[in-house]
Image 1 (cartoon, one colour):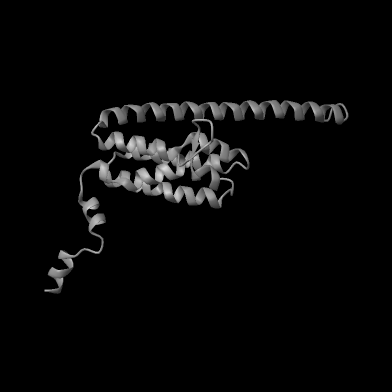
Image 2 (cartoon, rainbow, N blue to C red; image 1 turned 120 degrees about the vertical axis):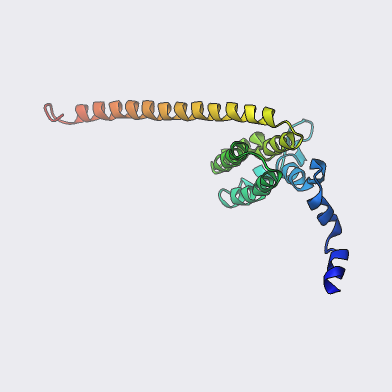
Length: 182
């Protein structure tokens, strides 16, 4: 009998109904988090919106960790919705890039205000939940190709910088050291 009573009166009937629902509109946690983290505040006189993410990014490390934890809830919602691993990795990359951008002292808050990884992840999630799996997978392929190109550019830049500084260092040593030492 006690088992029957616990089924009849759930602890939180609204949360239980939303958890059992297959309707994407009922999964409001991700929407609420994305709104508060990315778009809850507006600069007066403009259409520029930002959320708590760049405000918390003013505290490097701690703020970014808090925001990433909250953004992780959106990733959990994506897993619960059954997104493919490539789509999940794209969402995780969005969150990771937001975290890394937020670690830059001073400029990190500015970057995270415009990058809005949580809103990006929410858009990916709602597109997936609406049944447009092909569209999400196609954009994910473009994302990873773009990421690969960006990584190649980064490696190229590092190599060029290494080469330039190496030549400068060599020229400085050659000017300082006596002839024949190099």
